[in-house]
Length: 285
Image (cartoon, rainbow, N blue to C red):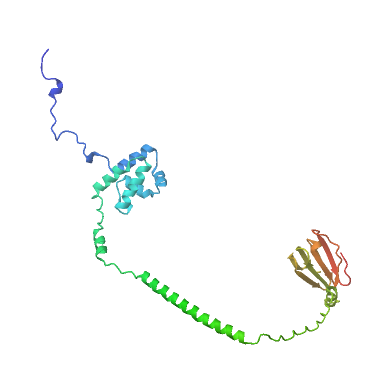
């Protein structure tokens, strides 16, 4: 058994330059870190774009360390934070790495000059509203006192004049009302309808008295004279040379005149009637 150097002692010693370096240059790039995290999360570029609302070309550019499509350093930092959170990475080290590789963040603009300029600016004098209000009150009070004093003197003069005037006044007799004349009698609706109806044609007049009703009126040749709703209080008159066909949706609400003569109240509310009238006396078809 010989005593000598072990095999480990035969290895050449490593100097400082030969030791492995773990400087920042050995860490993965921002794009490589984002891409590896995305693959590990099982996401595609399209899915990352849908989650973050960052366009697909920009996501591809970030993974390739191409930040030119971001539109500036501010937007690039925002896109890095958004995509890193989506794939499960801590965004702050990546943003710090971006700042170190692109000159750092710009220093904020000092606000001291603006404050100094405002301090130098003279203050504007505000109007003395208190003095103006006091003066206005004095004027109003003086005017009110003058008005009350002059008004009391006028009232005394009026009272004196009333006392010295006559105590009794003669009242003129009230005019007698003129005798009222009775109003001229109006012709009955049936009489006016008879006078207005031509003898050589058929005339039908419909009036909605108690409620509205749907009506349809056709001439002898099938022409539609009216098809619609007749509201309460409305009237319709139809004239034809031979005949008129009617359909009343709510016959009990309709007052009916045919050739100037009133047709008796023979319909009920809600009743549907189909009627046909010609020249001469009313004849229900």
